[in-house]
Image 1 (cartoon, helix red, strand yellow):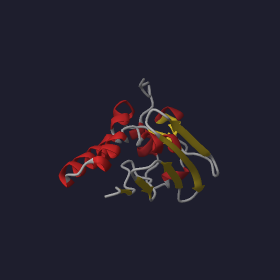
Image 2: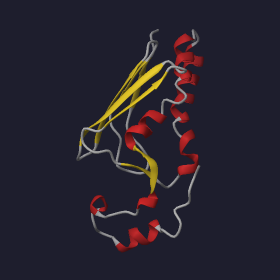
Image 3: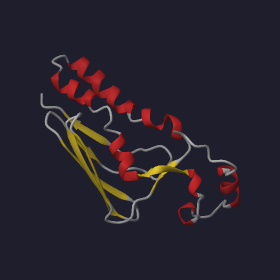
Image 4: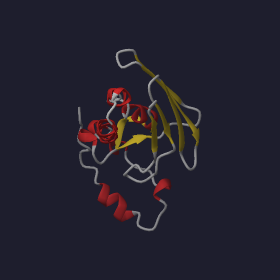
Length: 150
């Protein structure tokens, strides 16, 4: 459930810190999502069944549609959290998510502090993914590679 940030104004914070390194400016906790970046990375696998469907498709066009749908499905969980960011995990912090209903086990770790680098692995058959990092910008620009068996 989305909780509004209240009277906190991101624009006022930015205006008062023009020219400063924003990574060193303390931000109010209301601007954060109620989870950390490792958990947020795992949320991108919520619709991983689309990749299962892609690995079973014989038609390359259908496979492309399934992979494209998976790529945009990562934004489904951000609908109510637009404008907020997840908490930064501490160095060495790990997160594990086991989803027997979806057939995967995801493990991630904060492996480097600055610049922030996360490592993640999903153990599943039928497809593989690789996360090559995320930008510190509002829009994630990291790459995700998907390898299907055919």
